[in-house]
Image (cartoon, rainbow, N blue to C red):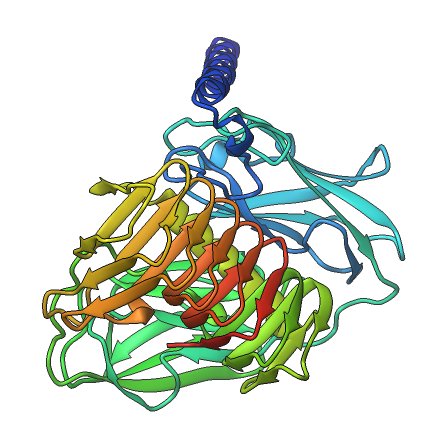
Amino acid sequence: MNAVKSTVQNKLQNHRAQAWLAAILMTTLLAACGGGSDAPYAGTGTSADTNKFPVVTSTQASDGATGIAINAKVSAVFSIAMAPATINNSSFTLLQGNTPIAGKVAYSGKNAVFTPDAVLALNTTYTATLTGSAASTAGNLLSGNQAVFPASGNHVWRFTTGSTSDTTAPTVIATDPINQQSDVALNKSVNATFSEAIDPLTLSNANFTLKQGNATVAGTLSYQGRTATFEPSVALSAATRYTATIANVNDLAGNALVGTSSWTFTTAANAPLPASGPAAVSLRSSATFAILAGAGVTNTGATTINGDLGTTPTGTINGFPPGIVNGKIEATTEAASLAKLDLSSAYDDAQARSLNAISLPGDLGGLTLAPGLYVNASSTGISGSGQLILDAQGNPNAIWIFKMGSTLTTGTGSQIILAGGAKANNIYWSVGTSATLGVNSRFKGTILADQSISAATGAVIEGRLLTRIAAVTLQGNTVTVP
């Protein structure tokens, strides 16, 4: 046994050394190319190849959260499946100051849960850590927020308890498809969003089911943020009624879901045309937001927002009125927090895409592009008053994903023109840093930015302006959710 343990430790040490060497080489190459400032960091989601190197995509409480129930468990979700043997009391710890908190660690799917042996102290700050010794099933070590991606390192977050226990039962607050929805796509996944974080270890295919009549549909189950997703193993049948059911699920304080949550939907009569290009990016609850920011929203002039407007953790919203919001305003609300979690998942998904990637030039003006995944490690945009045509070639399900390592900039009077049945809802711009849309420009698609988004005077957007960390700035714009 000692010989085996020694061999494993040697492999882990070699792996760490290789990972750090790779990071150093990457930094050197970036500096040589003038791109050092855009080096990706775990924890920001920037350019993280999370299909290979694991990162933590969400935790039960964001770093710095307060008012956490004293009877709650501590949980984290990984980007990929981990080796269960590496998720244990050595790699997942909880400290009060320098004092370790005793508890039990469990792992299932992509979820790790630390259950304290006793309730936590009132109004006290705790530090949770997942160490760099946690490894994926392929043996790649965790690249936490304390390391330069893809080097191995710890992921650390802190939270402060409140003065009460959580005694409120969780509920299902949203589903996709919604109850009684018709014409649902045959390749649709089934999602349920809860009122609070649930214990992922209580979620399984036994208590989240999808049935056609009495026949259970086979599929895989995942959990991220507050949303559980059931992905059918095969396409659903056309013109068929399905029933989704969730029962016997607990929140992180052990409160059980009250009763059973069940909803039905009917699939489309005919299968849609197969989508051209990559698979769509799932926005989940962030899909209803025309504007979503991390550090506030500022507007000057007669801006009209056709969709929801939200910001968290900074709740500052200026310029409404005179700006008009034809939707909900969510400033540091539960809905905004959930949408931000889903936005981060969507951003990480888009940044991780690499299959059949096409090189994306720095200037898109004058181009006509077919559906596909387009990638530029630096910056891109439309210079001057140029036009970019996106041609779906007769397929309304065609998808475009534009992934860039740094900025997106469009010029004054520039336009994106849709042709051949292309839809703005099927266009995604994954921006490594910030996006700037020019004066009187016409933009199509959803921007998923790591940093800020600015729309200059008169810019019209059919899509969404969603940023993970910084602010959204508007100047007499019209933004419409497609």
